[in-house]
Length: 242
Ligand code: NDP
Image (tube, rainbow, N blue to C red; front, side):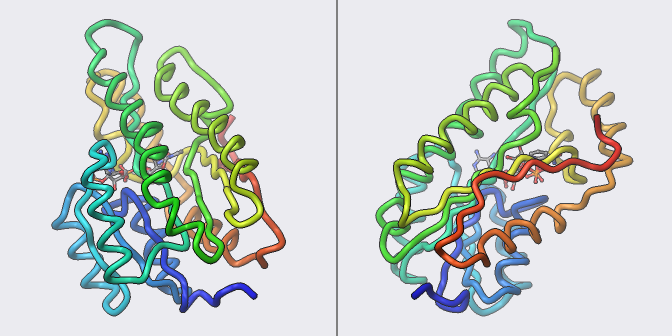
């Protein structure tokens, strides 16, 4: 017998903005208690205050395993353990492939790929206790590659391969779902360090039609399926995205 949402606890990494914040709102509205993880503590504190009962803000950088271990301890102590982990924290530092961008490459791999892997192994005991879900936020860039997105795409292709392995390794008690969005209207491109690329990419995001709430609705839908049914992968794009 699966738990009702009101018994369930969802941990969302990168809950301070965009898809993560929208997912935390959607899951809280569906009855989950939520742990909001991110580095910008002012943002997650404000979101926790907005959501009220059943929302806890926990400052954690996903590249810092000790911070994730502390976060997991707080989730255990304050919420009784995680049932859902949404590996959403990510950065998209696009640009030409050049030594000048070497810091961007390391950061993307550490946040997007190693951060998700670390969060999952840290929360694994809690997720295994009673039937859990892992939602991995990948991208259309996990299935395609372009000249200016090589390392970002590598992190998302990496996430896709790791997710499929994880799905097989953890079934049937833990369901693993990969979500692969196209362009979504968030602050993601604002962190691009290569200025010409940032400006070019921002133009596409200025007219983005898909809102983070639409991704959050899909995540809530996936989680609402009965436990005998696992949705493995969802690829979605704005209708006009090639
Ligand atoms: P945002 O920039 O709005 O959100 C990114 C989130 O990641 C923020 O909450 C940020 O929080 C968090 N984050 C970044 N670095 C770290 C870190 N080291 N430790 C913990 N949290 C971190 O962008 P989106 O909402 O768009 O991105 C969310 C996910 O969706 C990403 O994985 C992205 O790759 C993916 N995605 C987005 C698409 C889009 O078009 N928007 C398309 C496809 C996939 P803070 O800075 O406070 O730590």
